[in-house]
Figure 1: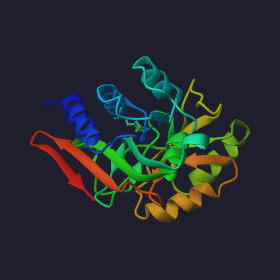
Figure 2 (figure 1 turned 30 degrees about the vertical axis):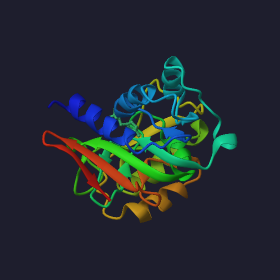
Figure 3 (figure 1 turned 90 degrees about the vertical axis):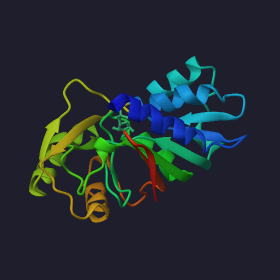
Figure 4 (figure 1 turned 180 degrees about the vertical axis):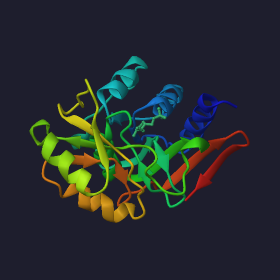
Length: 218
Ligand code: ABF
């Protein structure tokens, strides 16, 4: 199995957790896209979806799945999304696709967060994947200086704007030993909208795809 086949397999495994009449929280990225495509096969069974990005909303609508506003649809029974890095404690780095803020909101508003990854994403410590941070544009330099003081090497994601009209700083060279603590610390820098650590609200279930099948971690 190649990486794409593993992503497809975990996305399809997540589908088994969807119950009739549910409104489903849907993530962003290529693994989430496989989930959306699979969800289309059972669209008659669900009452709609809440998307964590404009791109996912568009893909859902393309399949004829109704996209609902979280304010009227929440709280949700389930949120299914991928990650860029994940530990066995179900702590995640997310935001490689730039949708981290809406992803964190939908995850927070969902009872069960099912994270779907292929085995290449599972690490002992987060940090090899640069940590995405969504920042209000006028605070970019201030936040970058604060991140440098924490030992990171922030880099502006060139030519990219989030769905919320903000910029992303990707922070390199962080070896993240305590993701729960760092997540809070980063949130307290003025100008930070959201950081890509999902540790305080980690995944509840992780489905990991490998050549030998799909393993569940809780
Ligand atoms: C989203 O998609 C993001 O949080 C993460 O950045 C990315 C994972 O991408 P992919 O599924 O394409 O590997 O879940």
